[in-house]
Each structure stands twice: as C-alpha cells, then as structure tokens.
Image (cartoon, rainbow, N blue to C red; front, side):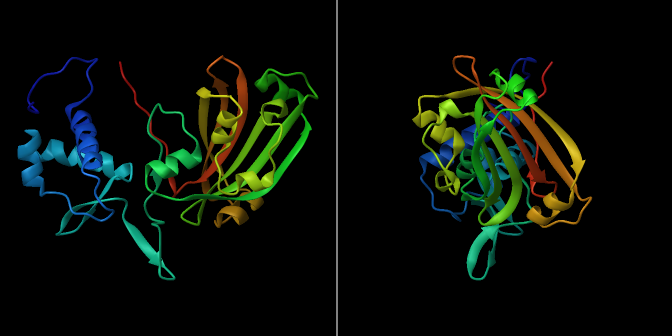
Length: 258
C-alpha cells in the first residue's frame, strides 16, 4: 500500500486507513500507558506511506486519546496528562471528542480514551412527562419518566451537564446511587433495551448562571449544546437527552461524504 495509490470517492482516505491499522497494531501489542512508539521514519517504512500521511494518521489517533507526542522525543501510547495533587488528571487544554458516526454513552467514550468517567447526580426522580417530552418519546402526556440530571466529569474534571429523560417503565428499579459512576446505556442494556441510533443536533450557546457555576466558567462563556432522541434496535424512542459541554473541553466531529 502506498500513499500515491488513487482511491475512489467511496473509499476512505489513506491516512484514515493507516490510522486504523496503527490503532489495531498498538492494541495487539498490549502496550502500557506511556510506552514509546517506533520513530516516524520507521513507521513510514513499515506502512509504506509518506511522513505527511503518517502524521495525519497519528494526529487522528491523538484526537482519540490513543497516542500523544512529546516534543523532541516522539510518540507515546495514551493521552497526554498533567498532574494535580500528585494524581494524573485530564489535560484541561486538550478537548475530548467522540468518534464520528458512533452512538456511545459518555462513559463508553471516556473508557475508549483511557479516561475515568464520573458524575455528580443533580437529580434522579420520576415524574409525569410534559407534552413536548411525551411527543419526543412517543408516550402519552403525563406518562411517568425517569429524569436524570448529572454533572459529568472526566478524571475528576467537570466537562458537561447532562439531562436524560427515559420512559420510567424501561428502568423500573434504579435510583441516584446507580449513576454516580455508571452508564445510563449500560443500565438500559441490563433491562433488555439496546440503544441503536440517535437523531442528534448541536448548537453553540452562552452559559447561563447555573451552567457557569456547575462548569466553572463565566456567565456568557461559550458552551456546546447537544440534543438527541435515542432509538433502540426495535425502533422505540428510549431517551431524550440534552448535554451541554464546556466549549474548551469538548470537540464535535463528523464525517461528511459525497
């Protein structure tokens, strides 16, 4: 394989395919966090690509938290981290992102990048669905829903405020204790409900007073607001979600193709 081989519009770019091969090879080697990769020159020879193509592939893996560079030393396994009070913490200067086109929970996204997801449960209660909520979930107005609102954290650092509404019948026996460090999607799967796809929209907004306080920013600071309606593998609407990210700690990515 060489980076001069032409490819059809339906074929993925070479740098992306090399990124996938690198990711697989790194995983097969079962390396420890912080292990050093071979030099760029050696990797270029191994995968038969130019240094430009290789660096694009490495940059993609860096965005996903698989590798990170150190100036003058090369590339290393895992996300670059700083230390706070003697403990490793997520770098506040490096936003995280989700893989494009993949439906995954916040917890699953964190785990895929070697990070620890956590939450402060702001509320977890059952209440009647309001009219617009019922329409989004395909249930009767006033039907019981589980309302779960959390401050989401990565390695102990506040990243987002997350509010999920789920028809209460899907999760009959959960409470706030279940969601301090557990995934909502995992709880749904445990009850035989499999998240399958989501209608998703994003919008830039300004932080209100509460959002600013929870996320540690000034009122009016930029936030990224994402809303979704999630469907299961039977087509049922199982979650209405609204998550608001700090603008400097999350990057939205998508794949566009003709």
